[in-house]
Length: 199
Image (cartoon, rainbow, N blue to C red; front, top):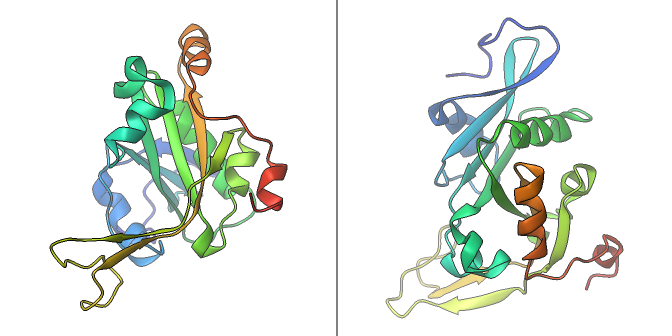
């Protein structure tokens, strides 16, 4: 499905659930990673009937992360915002899409997302939509004992480089559940100013 097709007759902006197949074009051709992540929930941003952005959520690849955020009790409630893509990225479109998508997520979730420093991302959208900043992962190189290479790296390079990423957390669900989950947050709650100091 092309974003050039009028999919929704509503004028102005709207955020609605969309099939993950509709997200493929923007994710593969606009997002810097150029690959599809695991998708459990997907939402589209429509402007005057045309889809101009997608936001997707899926299970984190790191099981340790699921247990580490809020402990064993909430490990099955952890989900990652793994793609945010906009065709034009007009002012306020990112916050409209993220905010609208979070409201549409069914159930109660601990949502985690990352801002990739190698792409110059600081996480402005997460600050604008009141996520909790919990620190920055370290850049590291991982050796693959089987000699397999990571996507976007030379086949002769046996190392996988993981760039430093700012980590954000958002709690979604009813108020009582959120209060309990927040009390179990294992990561430090840091001020956004920490980002500017590069810590």
